[in-house]
Length: 277
Image 1 (tube, helix red, strand yellow):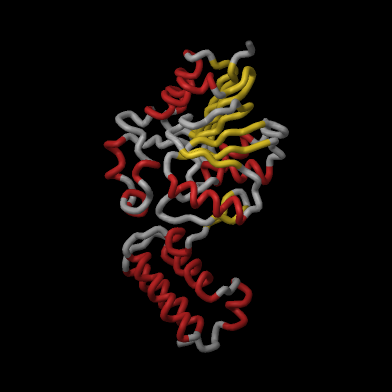
Image 2: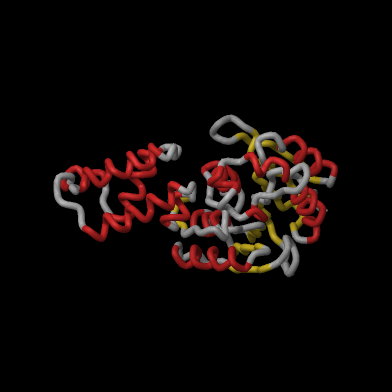
């Protein structure tokens, strides 16, 4: 089998299994196995494929046909132009979440930052690498998630701190900026998600309880003990949750509360400032 035939074989198998974006997925798995770029593929397409490649590629195709996410098969993804390791202990970073990082980058220079519900660490690590922060602390309830975040901090040479606990549990310091992408999918909606999310991504990182707003209420309600006067609280929210989160922040004394949209024009980011003393 030639290298070209190997790729075509992968495309055909994923198409027959009705995998979304089958050709794109087949290419990423192919590139992961062979280490080829598009240009090297075109140069070598008619060469014979190595036996080891065929075996590993077939195994990865079989995994993808079960609807296991591509990123959990390759254990890699990119976020804010940085490389991240991911496995089934953490959510796969989404492009929507880059909007939260880009918003936070405008106020983290020289500041102390807390990233709650950090998961893979993609938000906090990106801010540490790109934002010129004075300090960044990553917090999560899951020790398994924090192991992934530690690996990603090492991968990106990010100088960050780690705290395990339920939201602010075990947090002792105060911060200028708190960022969070908490679980926000209503429990009743989880079973309707695509199989890649519903069956493989960690349920505790998805489930925002009955209305999806449980963790926003907790974070906003507890944040005044950990956010300095004049500090900023920044959330990612579900596309239809921005107004509710905005309202609760205002009721809790936050000022300059704003909703920002994602690249699709949907409400995605809510930010607000803790009132000065």
